[in-house]
Amino acid sequence: MRDVETFLRNLDVWVEDQKRVLEFIRRYRSKLDKCDRLDLILTIRYVCSRMLKTIKGFETWLQSPFIVGPMPLEVVKEVQERLSNIMLKILDLSIEHVNEYRNHLVKLLESREELHPLFEEEEEERGETSRESRYRI
Image 1 (cartoon, one colour):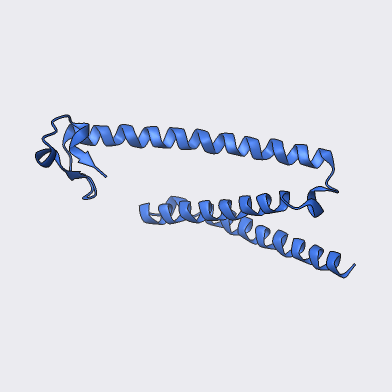
Image 2: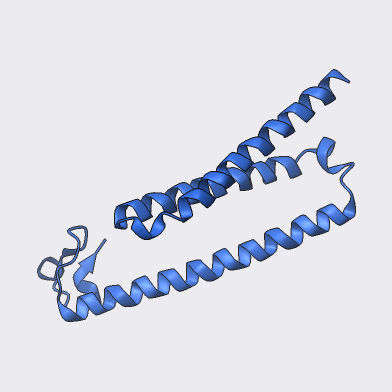
């Protein structure tokens, strides 16, 4: 019984931590229109970090027979459906973002605008002439 009580307390701590993060993110979202580019990037990194922590929690949770054994089928189905929907949205975002970034980068290459120093010109060294082969990361 003592182990179950400890387990229940751990669940309460997890839920309270998640609620604090949720409230923080909700409050912070109202300030995003005042953020500069760096603040927005830091916000994205924080959100990704919290998503990873939450997903890792789900993964750990679902690996335990102690947890999934008594879990009702309806709960399993709901979690599976909701997580699948979230994954689809993340994949859509990833595809859209990478395509947009790639297209933007191609436009920069075509306009010969200044690129980040990580994109070094190597055409002279390699004897390459195609526009996309000029820059390497």
